[in-house]
Image (cartoon, rainbow, N blue to C red):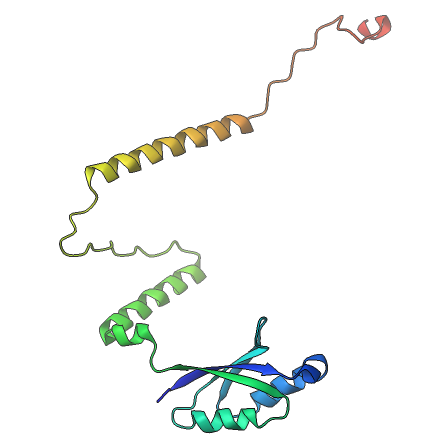
Length: 172
């Protein structure tokens, strides 16, 4: 059975033009509904519900409302991240997130992230990959130098007496 579900709801045309907010508030009033948001596209709103066993009854209750045209149910049995993650990994991930948030609030730089471990049997970057990385870094430096050179202001031309366009009185 699903523990959580998303309901894609299409409302009647009359309600879409007048009374749409009241219809959304009507959905919010149901105790199983966690949130309701309007969306664009084929459906008019999405509602997240938590109804482990009563999901079918909840859908029938929503479909019984006069302003509902169609309901599409997207069931979620268990989030994949939680299924693959052990308790220690989850705790470590949450602690790292907490450290980052605390450091951000204090204005400190982010804490160091542990180096990414390679898969077993993976020897690391090859000579070709290192060469390509070095070439890309050189190209980046060339482009950076080019744009820095373009940003420097040009030297103004020196003023020379007797230029074309100046009158005799302006030259003195």
